[in-house]
Length: 228
Length: 197
Image (cartoon, rainbow over all chains, first blue to last red; front, side, top):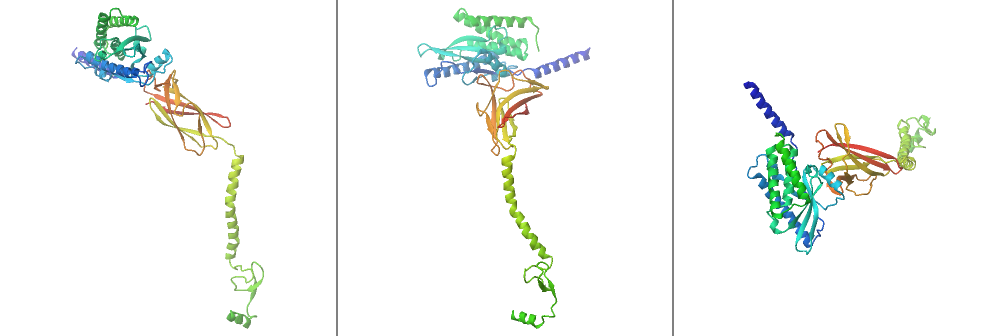
């Protein structure tokens, strides 16, 4: 009896070790392409620079928020970063999906447009491409907007942070992490969604679909058995 | 000279005579050299005779090589022989060096890329492979420094990786097929492989 218990413990240990070894590499790059409407040397270029700074800030705050001091098992989050790529030359959505399949380390791809009515107030209209990480989200692209203002620095209660959190949750699932690990991202995403709703009222089309996808994933996670 | 003449004149009948081995003129039996044709009477006379012939042959040698080169240029078949060496394979770049050991220029018209895994050939979808020379074909001429070209993959002009995300790294090889033609129009293909990084 005692021997069989020992054997079970050894077997479980071995299985955990094998699972850890075979886990897929985490995706840690948020690829940002140059937005349309950005003209070199003009105010739009400076505003796009500001948007890049905002995104960078959001990512570092977001990972800190999820970690909440407990980094065990989440060490890979420290490598999540923004990579500003070259000009956006994609001609069709299929090419973007192909590119995402090709890039093993890319978590999500951001392209979009920078718009302003008065050359003072700028808004970014971002297209988030999640590739295979879209899971239950029905479209290839999540379309969201964000004002480019100094108030956005340090703020993570926004739709860009929400989509990145969703992508991180789906990537944790892809990597084969257990329920509690994935739940950490899903809880943070649900909290963000609730906060956006509270401040802005009704969600836009894409955010409403993202909410559905989040709920579906959460329900699936709670209903299924725990992984490794 | 006078002494020698007096010596000769003193005993002309006592000297035994023979004929030169080269010109048949009468000379003394003990003469080393003929007084008429100046030929040596021992074996060294052959050396002189053959050395003239040898010198003539040496003089002909450069003429012969020049005429041989000219005839090769005029009558030999002109063909290019392009050789390729893979000098680097990374996820985003493949470097090749081309050389032509033939006698006429060759043109590299295209390079296609595939992955070999467990003996299967996989062509990554949607990848556009471009060389550092741009859109133009590469002309590789004989007796010229090798042409160095680096190839990069892209999708819609956005840099991409040669290895798609889903491919396992084990038992993986890059396969490059290089198409080239020579000026006579004959088409050839080279295949080169390197291990996936």
